[in-house]
Image 1 (cartoon, helix red, strand yellow):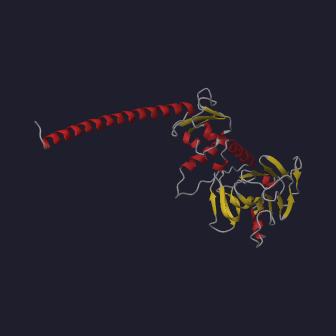
Image 2: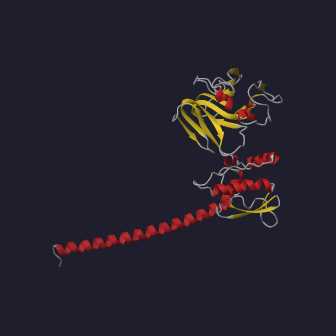
Image 3: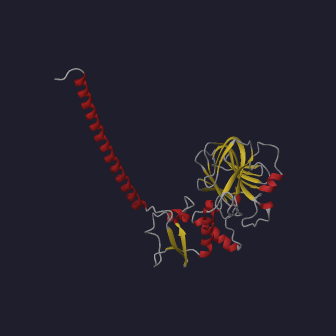
Length: 334
């Protein structure tokens, strides 16, 4: 016969024992669920690898480049994100890529053009803050250099090999947020003028593209840098195209600004968010959303304008005086 405290203690012991048993079962169930989750995750990774072909970045890739053998780390080939070369050697397409009879991946390119590209990527991978910056390749022979540019462009490597930087040219410091290459953008709270400069190389910019966000009074074009600066007026309301030695598409009024002279382009309304403006051949050709709208090239079937600003197509720069660079003025996001 139990009385008082003894009965209470027995009931408490049973409760604790039952609680311990319940906690133990829940702990076991949790461990089983964790094991099942780990197993499912491992299977998902295996399935993902089979589907996408993801490989280790430290893989050594053996290449046959135009008949010459080369061994390169996968992470070197894929170091410029978004490029064709990065996509090709991501590991997803290894089984479908062209190979020689020894199983080496085959690239139908001259080794003298592909090797400088790889050596630059290798140098960038070992670049340190204390050492000198790695310079982009500059082949001495003119024809070879043009062929190298072609290869870089073909593989989608231009932003990685020949980076550019946007600089505030005229406006309030601190009023603009500027994105660096390759994701260049501008968010400006004040109407300002910006230029695009090369960074660590001598390759000229001959074409560029701007995707408009929410903008005000957007003017997109080119300047002859040294002459533009020398003759710049004191009127801060002037942008590219308004000044001497500058040419621009006026996205607000829908026309061309040629050194202060405005010419209306019929059919062009106030261009808004999402519009894509492309300037080719240093301002000789202008496209909006893929459609050619104005050109100084006689063979183009579109409206023509007299080029009073730019040197002829194919002109070889004669020092700093003829440095033609992209320039844009506006307020907002692009």
